[in-house]
Length: 185
Image (cartoon, rainbow, N blue to C red; front, side, top):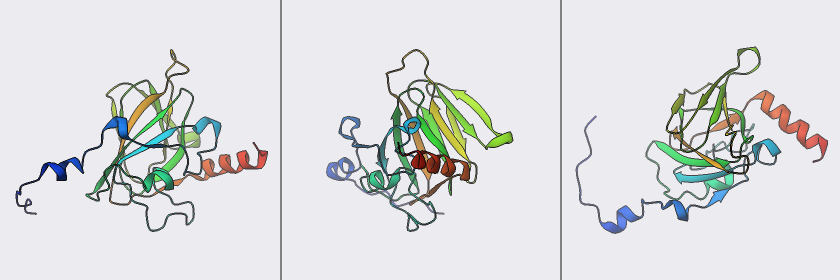
């Protein structure tokens, strides 16, 4: 594969590909688990995350949810996506799967990442600048477990491959969502 031809880029073109952290718009809705107390979080779509064509069919969704996927700070499709999630301790996301790689980098706090479910469940605690990369087809979840600051949100960066990646909650996660909805909370 040949490298692209080097060309001149204007300041305006590069500024259109710049996202200032203070200008990012966060979303707390748009995923099936968004309304669960243990999943209260804010997701920031920085690069990419276009809505997948199959969104809404059989539980398939954008990894950042339908709301954030419509509002990318840098709406490009160049083979990867990048975002942040912020939440308080005891919060995170339910187990889910992606059709592409997902890599996490801890920005602040301590996080527990889990993979597999049931008797095969594994966990690992990670801290600032630790990185973990999950392959497609590996059920995974994350939770902020920072013990010394119960009211402080911490940040996790995530990078997901593809131009319009898809995620899907596991059967156990969908059962938890259904249980919560039946309880009428």
